[in-house]
Amino acid sequence: MQRFFVASCLTLLAVILRSSDTNALHVIGGSVKVVQGGTAILPCYVTDTNDDLTQISWQRRTRENPRNYIFFTASYSDGDRPQFFNEQFKFIGNFKDKNGTLQLLNVTLKDEGSYTCIFTLVPSGNQKTEMPLKVFVPPFTSVKDNLPTLGTEEVLFATCTAVGSRPPAEVRWLTGALADRVRTTRNYIHYDNGMTTTVSSLFGVPTGDINGHKVQCVISGDSLSKEETLPFTIQIYFSPREVNIKAISGDSFECVTEANPNANFTWSRSGQSLLQSAVRVEGAKLQLLNLTSDLNGLYQCEASNKYGRKHGQLYVHVPSVSPTEVNMKAISGHSFECVTEANPNANFTWSRYGQSLLPSVVKVEGAKLQLLSLTSDLNGLCQCEASNTYGRKYGQLYVHVASAASPTTVEAKD
Ligand SMILES: *[C@@H]1O[C@H](CO)[C@@H](O)[C@H](O)[C@H]1NC(C)=O
Ligand SMILES: *[C@@H]1O[C@H](CO)[C@@H](O)[C@H](O)[C@H]1NC(C)=O
Ligand SMILES: *[C@@H]1O[C@H](CO)[C@@H](O)[C@H](O)[C@H]1NC(C)=O
Ligand SMILES: *[C@@H]1O[C@H](CO)[C@@H](O)[C@H](O)[C@H]1NC(C)=O
Ligand SMILES: *[C@@H]1O[C@H](CO)[C@@H](O)[C@H](O)[C@H]1NC(C)=O
Image (cartoon, rainbow, N blue to C red; front, top):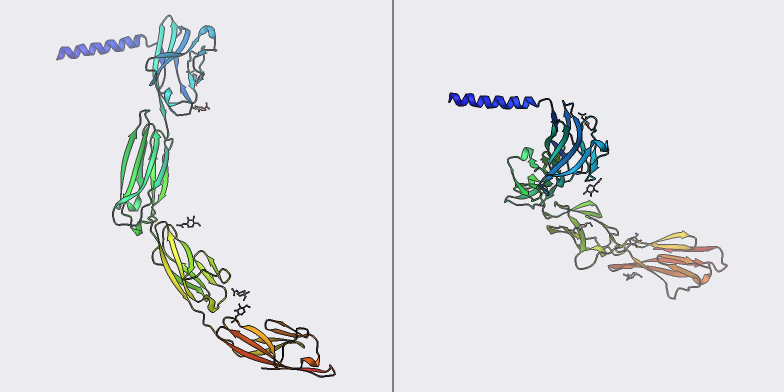
């Protein structure tokens, strides 16, 4: 036991001595990490030597070429114009300072491997150092909504994915107040090229009160320069619930429901088409433009989204009125108008008692009568009939033109 201990101490001492023997000379390298597409610096230089440097060369081995091969040499006679076997590399060291540093442009996964820098020195001979080059690939990150619908069983709400990361990315959910109402899982998918896809799923019971809660997916790892946070709002989808029709004013109505996504509304009229000229439809709103009994009937509002549809009904009843008392209004000395109230509006017909209306002496336009020339031929009783589907009423106008053509009197009689 004792002897063994002494023996190992001696070997240790020998090792230390041997290394301090050549301690004068160091080849310094490094360990390099770079993000795919970026630029890597492969540092290498010699210190503590007065030897002559005759050549600097680099070799590497990678996944594709597992045996070391030389891809760069620079000899003293080249000066600072070294030979490259690969245009991706750029010599940024300098011979005079025994600095063999290289730059590697546009790093790809294929460049990952082990790099050896070799100095040929006189009289020491070849001195080298080996360094690893690690290539990081940041992932593509996303959150996908699984569109859960209202229910009582646990379902998948969403998945958060970091695709193609190297080294593997960590994906986790920050669920805050919902922590004890949701569950998360995590899976890694490893690919042959060394990339990993990480998927984290968020599960829970899709109740109405969980709808609208905000959570976050956090992606981290060496492949990302900084942690990435993707916000997500939990949405529970459902078809339109009960449809209510609300009166906005005497002639305007609105269809109201709850749905996610918001419902689309369609108004229709039971048994016939909507009269485009008599109603105006704007989304959930229906406006009756002319309150006539023509509009009477059953109207239906359909609320729908991709999960279903519900209907609401509106019964329109505009009371119908037959023409009320007919009044004769003088518009001017020889123009008169027949006035009444009716629903639907009344039609007017003028006639002359005992004889026909002479188109050469009177002009009729709906409720209006105009006497064109004031001659005694016009004398007599004119009658206006106001009618609609529900009834009719009459008004009378007594015309008397003095035979001398002037003065003229015209009397209205109701
Ligand atoms: C070697 O060269 C690189 C690139 O020019 C430089 O950054 C580095 O400081 C040099 N090292 C030494 C020890 O001179
Ligand atoms: C980097 O390499 C990729 C793949 O080899 C290539 O598509 C891209 O054009 C290169 N970019 C530059 C700046 O060389
Ligand atoms: C509605 O009333 C307006 C004015 O009151 C009228 O111009 C229009 O023709 C009416 N439309 C229908 C369909 O009755
Ligand atoms: C609702 O209306 C929008 C816009 O008009 C349309 O893109 C969508 O497809 C409609 N949805 C349904 C369920 O009809
Ligand atoms: C009123 O007149 C319109 C147009 O001339 C006609 O279509 C309608 O049937 C008439 N209504 C009545 C009650 O006579």
